[in-house]
Length: 476
Image (cartoon, rainbow, N blue to C red):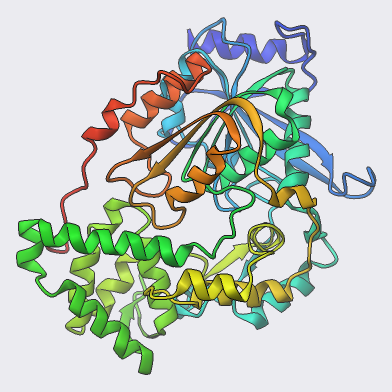
């Protein structure tokens, strides 16, 4: 049946859809990683400078995962990836939730690599030698590397033209080229910001929107990282104290963390780490800022957070190597040019000194993440976005907002604020889950939402059954 659906979809690429709209974007069968099922792939060219409608072109990478029926619903689901900087189409895998989601039973699912991501003219800023482990432990956004990247890209790309509003114009062009009149939107993390921006720009083209780990266009990220991570840490400390195995294994968790932070205030941590590529042992130096950023990333979601008491305990007893091996690098090794353009022109553009002092006070992260980001932005070409970008998104289409109770990146207050100007919205805070968390319970809620086209009367009772994973007491 699926092969027949794929073949029929490929043959009808240039024909009219149910609503009479022609499909001009040619799609052909292709494969994605981790799957032996063919999907449909296509390429769509847009001008880098849309306003001038001339000059360089960007070829957007498009993947359509067809519905598991020969008669799909007219409105597909467009998926927006996070980051910013992750390519939605380039990230499609056969073992992803979208391949098995209930949504796919009756709707096509469309992935587009946004301009500057994936296979759609991505340009990266490398912050060091990937073979050198120290690269992952350097301070974020080294200014000399930011400047070098800016100069290297100047002749091949206008980084100022990779903002979210411009990218949403691209996306609507893809929608039209695929012959869809209306679409549903799903976005997580930065993808939620992009989805809400598309809703602002093209409200008549949207049937419904579901977003998770909500970051709105007006949210001043990374300003909220410090307070969100602190709340996630406080909840983790409380959970460990209430859990007998964790409490018995790490009775001094908070004290050990406080002692590490105090020590790092004065002296960076130095330790030896084996390079998995070369097998050679390398000397590593880690500052307080890098330590708290890695800890923040561990607090994004409960599975990684469950290791934190153990890793802090090991570090407190001199084993920094374990902390280093099991914590993510974040943007320490490099970022895409699009990441800098979007964050600097949009989310970080209006952060004030008063904001920094208020939002970072009494947090383990302090001002580090916000100030290092703003220093990088001062070196990056300034893109322009419309003044309306910083206003609340207002719409009367159904919107479902999902927030993880333990989200260490986008606190639920951001979604709550967004819901106030979305007349048909519903905000669900999911217990014991983190940033843009995915679970069969949430898959079912989103599928029901897209099926009904309404956030009212959704059955969300299953969220009360979600629990933290057990704390990790020993390393494998």
